[in-house]
Amino acid sequence: PVKDGEEHLFNPKTIDLLQESLINGDYAKYKEYSKAIRNDYHVTLRSLMELNYPVGGGIPIEEVEPEESIVKRFKAGAMSYGAISKEAHEAIAIAMNRLGSTSNSGEGGEDVARFKPLPNGDSMNSEVKQIASGRFGVTANYLIHAKELQIKCAQGAKPGEGGQLPGKKVYPEIGKARHSTPGVELVSPPPHHDIYSIEDLAELIYDLKCINKDARISVKLTSEAGVGTIAAGVAKAKADNILISGYDGGTGAAGRTSVKHAGVPWELGLSETHQTLMLNRLRDRVKLEVDSKLMTGFDVAVAAMLGAELFGFGTLPLVAVGCKMARVCNLNTCPYGVATQDEKLRARFTGKPEYVENLMIFIARELREIMARLGIRSVAELVGRIDLVRQKSQDDNFKLSRVDLKRVLFHPYIDASVGHM
Ligand code: SF4
Image 1 (spheres, rainbow, N blue to C red):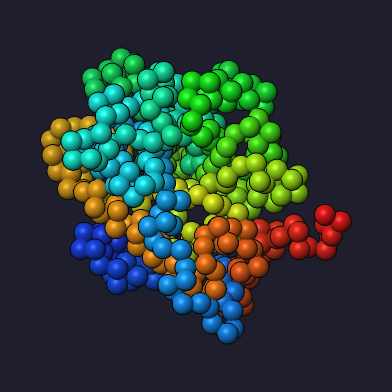
Image 2 (image 1 turned 180 degrees about the vertical axis):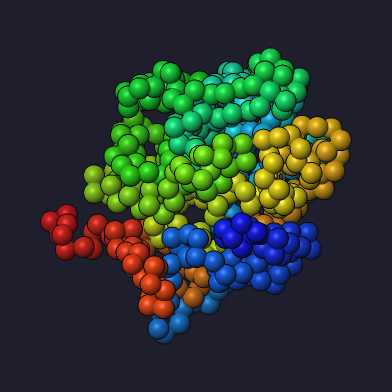
């Protein structure tokens, strides 16, 4: 709880525990952090859920997919160079590339120097490159240096709004990467002005496949009522991945009104999308990804059970490299050198790729422990296993006892109402 009485999952206690664990590579401390997140607060839908562990026990942990393989499903979320500092952006990219996973350029291009590997074998190249409505920095050279091209249709934290970068953060090097004018505020339009239908989207997907035939094409949607129908259209437009982004996260540069009043939790959008794709026999055409404040192995387990196969982390890697949630990202005054372009503040940056690597490994380790207890051998086996999660009894809490998660925890192939399937 903070002084205004609102509960925050990230607070001084959880931030300190997490940062200490990552700096020292201390898994026991990470478990303290994870326990604090799980036990102290009821601010998420998943905190109202518990897992259905089998009565006879699970399987030996050695039989479960190794951590190194699990982390390949973890991705760093889209945060642009400009919103965050060069040091933070590069540290996260190096860490994710070392793990064989991906980081995301975010909206706003990338310095071409990062496309070449470093002499020590590391790479600062963001393997996922975003195509957002402002199209800043989207050049042919940018597009061919990606393993995945992500069309951002909306942002979970501020659905209906485009990205915003205040003029004071548009330093000359940022302007260069974005092919824009330094000092001038960059506000992306809410929609892509060439996409007003699924057919338009299909055309852009086709164009992107033409320029980079090896890249997977992902479409980022936001969690909202009806997103399942949109996702069905996106699958038909031949996207390879669909990302469902919830309302948490990405809030650094979002307006106060959006932070407080827009968007819905990923649990709702993800389960609706998974169910709709199943019922329309489209589920096998796409991979489903989810992001928005996934914070622990438990969160990832629930996301997989609700249908996700890939998992994005935005705020967490920022905390790993030093963010303490001062929440002034849009002011260019981040005291930890994470979300600022000011050279003096950037000099204070203390983050290292190793901390982000520890973060991903620890989450994978925790997930692996959960899978062993559940008797599940791989993440692939866990996807869509809605039978392994249930709503907690909240008899002691009148308000929470009135929350009904039946429709979220619904399996379209098991339920009698769709028995004809
Ligand atoms: S410390 Fe504050 S300003 Fe810096 S990245 Fe974190 S939330 Fe943003």
